[in-house]
Image (tube, rainbow, N blue to C red; front, side, top):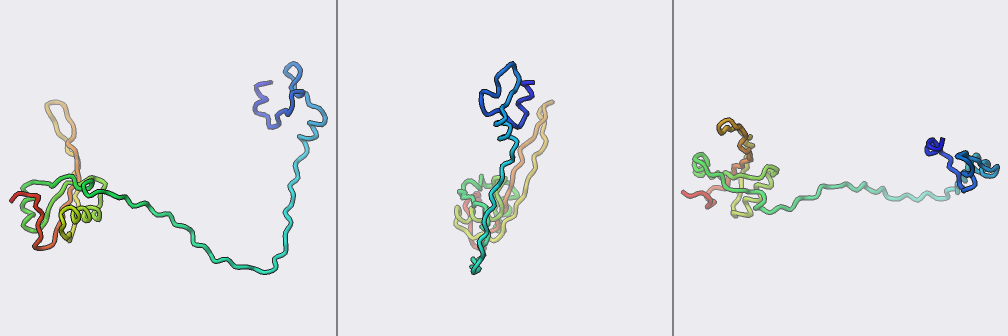
Length: 161
């Protein structure tokens, strides 16, 4: 029964209790100590003389820490295609950006890197496409593309014209 003693709540407090051939013997004093429930002392209530009102403290709201990101961690490279070069006439420029960036971050990055005023930002998620080479098939990587419209009369010298 020594294996089951592990699961019992009351464990012996002295070496005398565990003497013998695997049997557990306790003295009367130890039994009385274990069996008596411990009484809790009651807190003495003091009469309230004057109520002092404390100003209600507003709960502290946890805010997300703003990520400090370099502009070069947002913009990967200019997206140079025929369509992108045609958009230059409309004051729009295309960039490959990192997948977790949003419009506000892209706007801030373009303004800081190129020193232009951004009017509008459009984002396009290009999905991964299936490709084959012989009988092995795989996927071409997807990416995120941002088309940025800038103020009339300003230029970004990214694309050769």
